[in-house]
Amino acid sequence: MAVILVVDDEPLQRDILKTILDDEGYETYTAASGEEALVLIGKFHPEVILTDLKMEGMDGIELIEQAPREPFEPSMIIMTAHGTISSAVEAIKKGPSTTLRNRSIKARCCLR
Image (cartoon, rainbow, N blue to C red):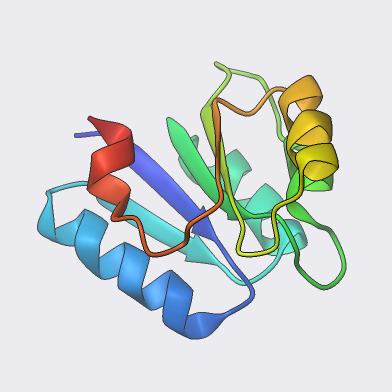
């Protein structure tokens, strides 16, 4: 199964996504910040990164800009409850695979 990294500064959101993904059989890691995510990306080389857009410190867009592309480029999905057209356009220009506006969407729907 795929290795997935969930990045969100809200513990409840991280835990919900981790539970759903673990139940689906994915190897799931979590990070509370973009900075922590960069460390975990280097250690576990996730195939998919699910990141919140708005976080304290490094936001989701900065994370995608700084995420290592070696040994391969992970698929990146930005989640947000605060989506605007301009933030979606900016995110897409940076290269995430998908931008999700509704945080209540189950992750498994997005990964199949």
